[in-house]
Image (cartoon, rainbow, N blue to C red; front, top):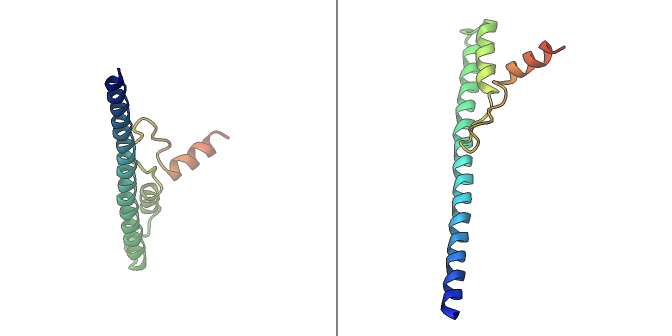
Length: 99
């Protein structure tokens, strides 16, 4: 009887450790996705500012495209079902449209 209890405790401890490793790895992968996404947004913002400085972008359509890209919801890979609004511009349009 004692051996079965020890084996059960060992199995429970191993299962708990595997579960903790799984949760931690999902969290770390989500952080890595957010880091890559933030880096992409920095590059987009710097490129946009450089193009404005060189007077190569002047239209509102260009501004709309970059703002939509910069303020889109970040996807971490952890929650695929809930994507939220399409971006800051979409959220503002939705709020203004409901009034």
